[in-house]
Image 1 (cartoon, rainbow, N blue to C red):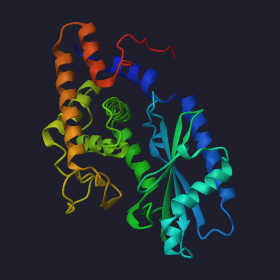
Image 2: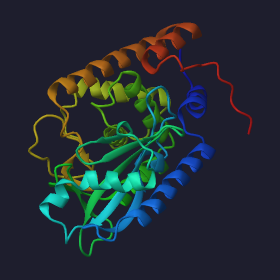
Image 3: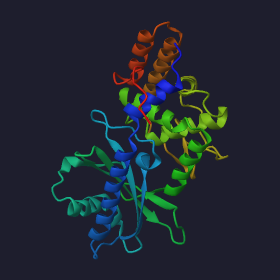
Image 4: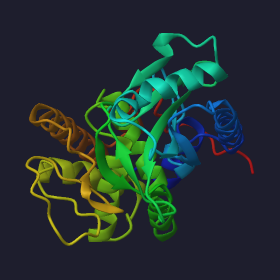
Length: 321
């Protein structure tokens, strides 16, 4: 049974997409956090904050409504002048940021924070918001490009937050199905418990590659099918160059940052994780193709739930304007 865009957009609007009012509330919470951070950086700090930039899925309008243990993610890029910082200061940067945040939210527990290679994460339980502070080393005479820094103090590749926002915005303008497809693919990723293996940014770039290669998705159903089929057929072993002309020497999965050809956003995906993603995508594609050819609405719904979870429904009513 064919699943129409009307049905899928209704599911997206009512179960996946963060509503405009909720998004406005969360963006205001992020803005308040930024304002508080500005005033709590000690004058004695070896880091001088140059600027903050809001980023991530919430800013891109590709965030998925929280469900279970999965929250809404927002990134705050913190551009830092580290000219007066020592190697020790750089190596302890994430701990320093955590103590600054504790000055804003003194009741936060250790379990509310987590350190990833390039970010300091924190959880706001009341709103379901997960915030990643992304420390960046500002580059002199560069307004937006900056170096990422690892949790051990080493410089990583360059990044460009406004460039990423524009990249997704341009894709969405070219194809009105792009953002819904991102949210649906992330929903599958979460349901398949592949959140560690496949990042939101990687999903955005895979769908961008399909849009570049094949044009806008002819429908949401076919857009999902071609996403899963691409993962199944390529095994994620075809480099995704994101508009760049030079293929890096990285072995394994290559998905390049559209703003920096030296930054492979999938560099930490190991072989077992690649196999897990490909296996799950193959099952998802086979299931959706089977659902397309069964005869009844009930059978179709049940198969789609196997891919996207029990919250998927074909019976949701279109909300009144």
